[in-house]
Length: 369
Image (cartoon, rainbow, N blue to C red):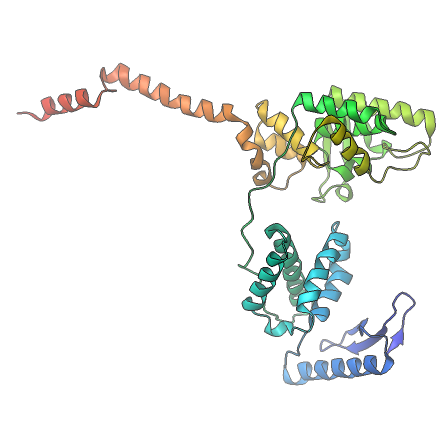
């Protein structure tokens, strides 16, 4: 029989699955009679699946809700995923997922593009749908088709926006004069010198700051890739850390957070202050994540290898780091210089080897009887 839960406005149902396990889920309705009908239909489908081997129809909600409840909640991007699902639900609600076709996926893509959504956003939404289908196929063995595969849109090359060292100093001066400007300036300098992401810094605790060895420690739960890494601190980063330490000692010595406000509470967002600083400094089309791009651009321009930049930034593959490869012309310049060496070697061995006419004359002499 349907039952109520304190954390849900809907009636919940419980059925026995073909494998003998009991499954509880929301009926999706606050009407008891409707919930009872949903429960009876679910039991009938489970019986048909067990006795006749029939794969019952699965709705969009039946596929997406358990994925969000069991799998996606453990992901760091859970809130982003639920936001993407809203657009999917508006289009696919009422669709029988057993019969989902490539044509329906293309229709969704066209509809979203007509609404002015970027190709990258559409791809992320479809990726959430594909992940939900795959999860249900693995966990519940539903055998649903996944026509999303092979139908992702081509995305433009990733955006790379970075600041010169002079622009970084200008931005820091603009940040310094604001409320909590000292913390904002330290945030900018730490980001530019370490390449850390925004949440990796705002969530940084003093217990993970090692001034003796000059390192920041990030555990798996603190990073986007769920992999721990250590961030070395150069002089610029150490100066920012020491400034933040002095501020903490003055206003809230017991606070565990590196970035705090005057009452010792953790800083949750710096967006407004950052945007105001950019406006004051005359820097346009620049966001907080671009500080990370700035760190990578400075390293690559200085000749640091892509693999080393990858390890510092915590990219899962070097392909993510290759977006900055064009900032290292010295590597390509060294490569083409090899051709100069080969040409010089050819000239020393064959005299006029660089002149095709001379080459032809020499060959004629060799073949003339």
